[in-house]
Length: 294
Image 1: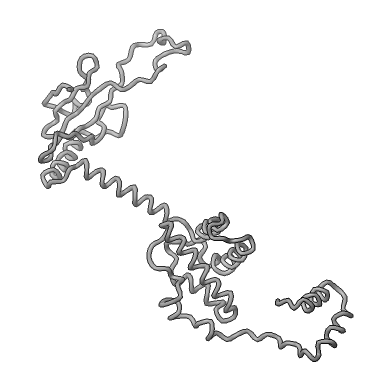
Image 2: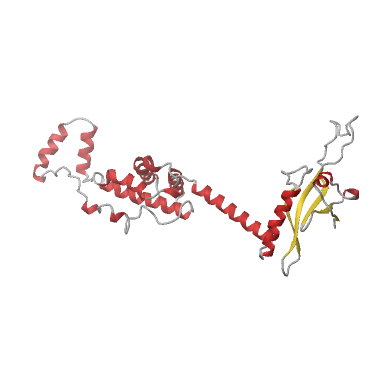
């Protein structure tokens, strides 16, 4: 066990040395606070010349020291515990805490002990919570555009059974209508106002495209929720949400298409079509002969 010396002062902290033979030495600093002093670990080659020999003509230097503050305490029914609370003046490592600062820190830790809180367990819990919050912040930094790319990459892997054509359609829809509105917004912050900003301009004029867009935004946001990039309900969901704001597809005015050619006029139409030159005329003729739909 390290030797304990009492009656520590600020000057004594600065001048404190290890015990005989470089053994760690513990100095009492009042109450539950102690100063531990030991030689620093010297890396191989330090203090030597290029040939690995002691540098000629160089005065021998005292080995660097490591000094740090310890808080010692006992919880009911448990063994004595020690908690490092920082480096001390004169140490080769860490930003030092003065004797007064260390005593203040020890007093606050002692208050925790008297309240039945284990300082080590409390510190570990706070560090874990801080790390978890940092991880959550990192996840929340993912933008909607990045979420789209991750989502589409997942579909490329085949787990969603998407082919290249289908994938290109998804990317085109989201890139054309959604990303210009909120592509750079963190996916965690995408809300109903963002979704409506993308849908409203095309909801009546391009009803089918708008409906597909809503479903694709919803899918990307669901994907983001699964990956913990966002929390809460999906702002692109239809039932009980957007359905209360936007007209259903059946209520949206349908686009007027050209009337079909009367079948009785088809021979005349085909004869006129064959007189036309160019690839477009041949393609149309082929589509009609094969009864293809556009």
